[in-house]
Length: 349
Figure (cartoon, rainbow, N blue to C red):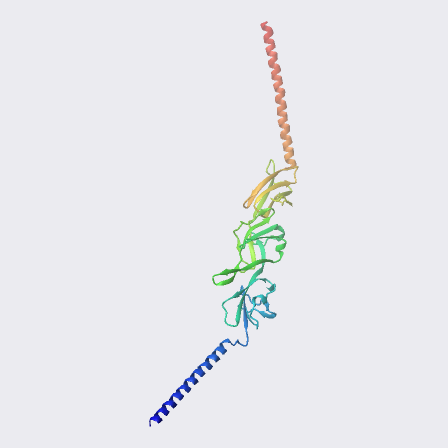
């Protein structure tokens, strides 16, 4: 009986040991399988490319694999080689639309990515085409041949200058440039201020007051400060309308001569503020004067006509005759006085 108990206990012990070994063996198998599963790479590896600013249609290659960004400025490329992905990204200079072009500034790695993936941020310099025109006080476009130069300063600290002829077609300006923020890289918009618009040697804008942003408007209409000057031509003495032409000298020294109308007057429009010389022609003598223009003004100019010359000659003759007559009368009075003094002296002696 005791022997049978010992045999039963032995069998139970053997069974327990077998079960323990089996359990340990199973746990090791599960752990090995889990470890194997954790280190096994996925079938595909991807690189997510994000362009800043987030523009669609940006073409690039990653280690020779072509990609194009979508509406959010991103694209995913399958690349089995994740090492050194940033050095394999190539973004050529390209024109996305007729008014937008980009170039690569730099490529940065974004550390926020999953296992067996990479995220690259391509920071771009964005330029936009802008049309610039000048508006007169009458809200009409000023002919560009009257514009000598235009100077604008950017929020980047640069100054760009154009001639009137260059503004006949859109000009390319920096629209956004990469900037680091607390949330990462972003495209910072560039703004511009008009420093000067030169017409006939004078600035027709208040420097630094007019601001524009290429990303917000592609057509810039710049209101400029212009005035009118009406010339009334009269003769010198009678103040009657006279003269045939009027010559205007601009602040830069250029001159223009125009015929006077039937009323002997003419109005110059779209003149910049400044000092002008005015001379009326068509008489015997043209008299010049200076007009300092700072608002719409009317100036009366005189010219010496033939009638003025006749009247002046008559006046001169009259004055001369009076002077001569006064001289003659004076001499006679002096002679008469002398004779009286001589007679009185003879009587006394």
